[in-house]
Structure formats: structure tokens, C-alpha cells
Amino acid sequence: MVKILKVAIFGLNTSDLNQLKAQIISCLPKGIDIEWVNIAEQKIDLLFVYDAFFNSPGIQKVLLDNVKHYLKVKKSTESDNQILNEQFRHPLTDLTYLRKWILREVLPEHFAVRELDDYSMYESSPITVNTAQFSFPVSSQQVAIEDVFNEVFTARNGFIKLFDYTGFLALVDTRTERVWVDDIKQTTFHEGLNQTYATAQFVNETIVGKNVYDLKVWLWQILSHLQLDRLPETQLSQSFKLTIWPQFDRDIRRKDFLKMSACFAQGANLLDVKQYLNLSDETILHFVSCANLMKFGHFIDQNDIQFIANKEAFSSGQFGKVRNFFGKLRKKLGL
Picture 1 (spheres, rainbow, N blue to C red):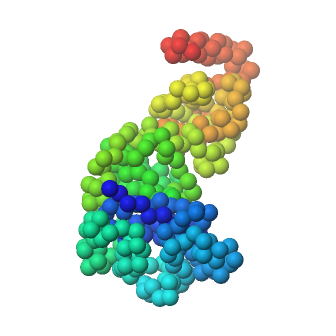
Picture 2: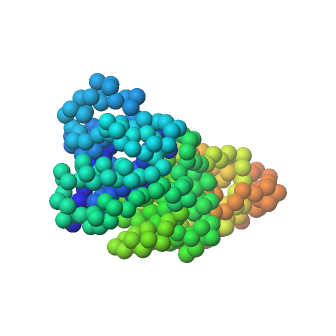
Picture 3: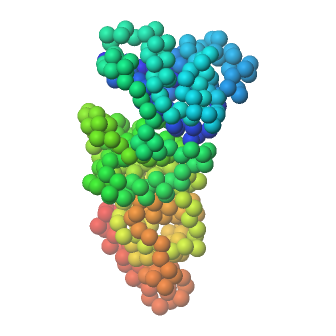
């Protein structure tokens, strides 16, 4: 049976939060899972708090009422991984002291030693942070979502892990464009989305018991519900050509998605499509941003546009061709 440890982290910026979460996970034996909670939680097994906030009345009340164990996190450029007076310096370069502290101070209170898999192995072997394995950003600057997706769609990367500030999200095989995820319907992208390479051991452990999905289908489902300000910036003045049609969910947006796909499949200006289909700026911008991020198409020059929706084209008969195209599309799709 998997044991659950409720852990909260308070006061760190996004990149430091991501790094510390991954390190905490690495310190736990098999059979222990983490539920990441906030400081409003009524029961917190372990709280990590940035030392600048430690003496605030709010944190002191949380420590008194809700927290069983805590550690202060002090930002420092000095390389010292020891834990003294319930405090350690971040970033850690060796997880041995943190791992031993958790095993000694936290876990025995919650679980019998015999319940934990590989407990003896974790007591004896050191854990050194491998920067190639974790490759987290060292500054507070967020990694651009397009940079993450460029790595996701680079086949030579092999297996990579996707994570955000909530922790591990999915295992991706970039060669076969497959993804392993616990629950495809519950996954979304929060702040701090990033990726790192997955070791062979991690891959072997992760694919057991997890469902495998088509990568592009899974990513489109997530991106199509993501807020526009989380996506790469796109302008209505740009022109776009769709080369691969996404697989759309059967929801109220499907008809608009299909119509936009038909227009952009010819190569079209965003403003022309918006006006022709009478859709909002956000709808058009969101669709093209997602499609471009997913490598379903690319931006083109004005001279490469085949879809024309201006008055001159209407008078010359182009409008009739477009209308006829949509008529055939509606028949085929039963719209």
C-alpha cells in the first residue's frame, strides 16, 4: 500500500520550488507518495519555509497548530548540505543529509520501518544531485512554454519528464510521440512548466501501471483549455497555414475548430478568418497559438495565402468557392 505524506513549501520562487520538490521526491523510499498541500491545510506532515518568512505571525500560527515537522530554507551561495537547527542552505548539491533527516525525523512517526520498501538502501547510499538529470532553471525566470515544446518534439531526446510547480506530470517518449500519465482527464499545466531527461530506471518504474496515450492528442486537449496568456504571443496581422488537423473533442467548440481548420489549411490571414467566421479575437489567437506550438502548422508570408476573404475576392467569385468548400465540409462532417 502506498503511504501518503502531506508536504508544503512556502516562500520560494517558482524555479527554486520546482528544484526542491524534485529533490524531496528523490529522498523518499519506494512506497511513499507525496501530497503537495498549501499552508491552509489542517494537517501538514512536513513544511519547508523560506527563513525570511519564518518569524511572521502567520507562519508561527501554522507551525503551532498544523505542522508536525518543519525545515527552514536559507538561500545561500555556500555549498553546505547539512541540516543544523532545523535549517539548511539552498540550493542543495548533495541530498544525503536531507534524506537522512527525513528518514530519521519524519517517516518513523508515520510509518513502521517494515512498511517501507528499500529503507536500508536509502539509509546507506549517498544521493548526489546530478545536474544533467535534473537540469532545473537556476534563476527565477520562467522557461518559455515554446522552449519546452521544442524539446518535446525533438525525437533525439528520447524519454523526458514533464513537470511544473505541482511536481511530476508525465513521461514522454519523443521518438514514438507517446505519453504515460496517471489520469488524462485531470492533467493540466500550471506555472513553472519544464522538462528534463528521464533515466532508464525512471522509465522502467514509471510505465508500469500507467496508461499510455498519443502525445499530440493529449497535449492538444490540455492546450485547448489553457488560458491565452499562457500561450506564445500571436498577432491578428500574421498569416498561418495548418498542415495537420488536430483531433478535436466533441464539445461546443468543435464546429468553430473545424471551420478554422478549413480556412487555415489553405493558408490564411488571422484577421481575415476572424471576420469571415465572425469569431472573437481570443478564439482565433488561441487556436493558432496552440496549433503553432504543437507543430501542426507554421506562419507564412502574405504572398502564400490561398484563403481570401476580402471584398475584391467576393466580387471575383472566390467567395463562392469558399462557400462551396464549407458546404461540402458540413455535409461530410454532419454539421
